[in-house]
Image (cartoon, helix red, strand yellow):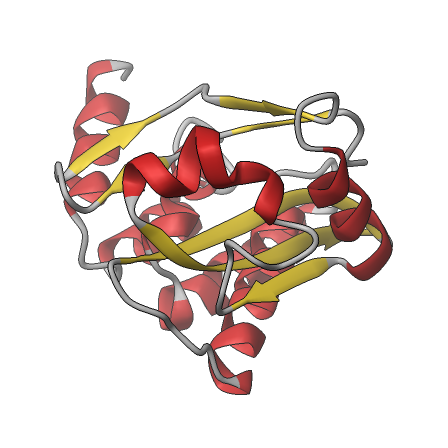
Length: 178
C-alpha cells in the first residue's frame, strides 16, 4: 500500500530527454498530496498551483520546473493503492479527458498484476494486453519479467510493441544477463 513515500521508478524529463529513478516524495513534506491520493485514488489538477492537494509542491517543484497542470492516477492491486502514474504539463494548462484517465487506470491495473505475486496466467494475460495498449510506463514492469523462463516470451512480445527507446535499453540489458 502507499504508505509514507513514493519513489520514482521512471521519471521522464521531456525538456532534457532524460530518465531518472529513485527520486522520493515523503509524506512529511507533502501531506495534503498523500492524503488526497489515499482518499481519492487520484488527482486531476489543471491548475496545479492552486489545487488544495498539489499546491504543497509549488516552491520545491512546480515553480522551478514551470509545471502548470498535474494528473496523478493511482495504481491499485487488490484494492490497495500501490503506486502512482504522475503526468505533468509544463508551460501551459492541460485539461485531461476521461479517455486519458481511463487509459492510465487500465495500464495501472495491468502493471500492478505484473509486479504482484499473482498467478502466472494473470501475468501472461497482462502482457498480452500491454502488447496492445502498453506505453513506456509499462517498460520497467515488463523488463523485470525478461529473466523469468515462463513469462519472458510474453514480456518480450509486449515490449516489442512499445515504440520507445527505453524498450531497446531494457532488451539490451536483458541480453547482457543471459
